[in-house]
Amino acid sequence: MNQFYGLIDSMMTPAHRSRTAKKNLREGIRKMQAEMSAAAKVRRDFRLGRPLKPGEALPLHPLVVWKRATEALASFRTLMALEKLQPSDVSAVIVYLEEAHPDVPRFLLLEEAGKSEEEIKSSVFEVLSRSDVLALGMLFRQFDAEKKQQSTFPFQFTGLTEGGIALLRRAAEMQGKMSSLTKDVN
Image (cartoon, rainbow, N blue to C red; front, side, top):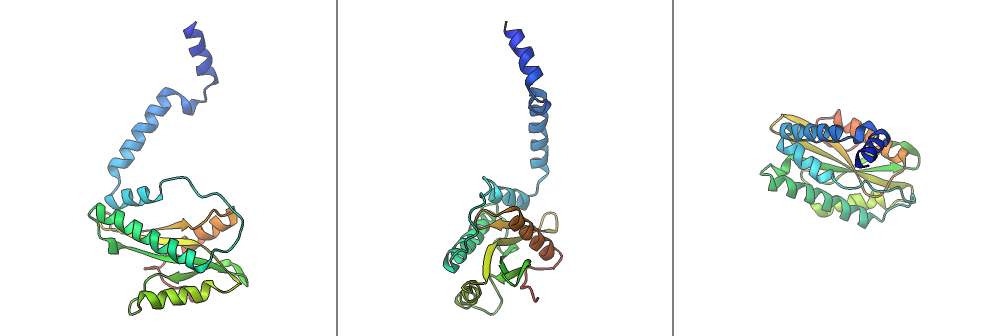
């Protein structure tokens, strides 16, 4: 009788869920992890978890945006330090949109040479307090010293629609082409 149920299960179970497929998947994951650099592992660990769900498109208060951005940057740098990597190899910007140009991502620096944290916070609040601005999330740039390459990836503050996610990806592509995370001059 057990053989019968096993046969039915094998017929009803999609191929990607078979024991062999799962075993192959686990082996592939182990191989991938063995080949990952320490920086790539930190990036993966930082991004683990459930994606945020799309919520209402209500703008976040500038204080909430600043808090989430600075906490995310500090958290990522802490993970880098725990892996004995340089926390300074990580930089980040806040990505926002203006009502006049909703398809053009704009950037706000979280750190800038020659400016104090209070000056940067003040300029961020000035922009994000405008009624025609919506903060989407952040872009992180991480330098992988082992592989000698830069990685740029988005980080959401709240759940976004597909359009919002596409804009964050476009912003990441734009910043990926630049040498460092910088302010958009458009």
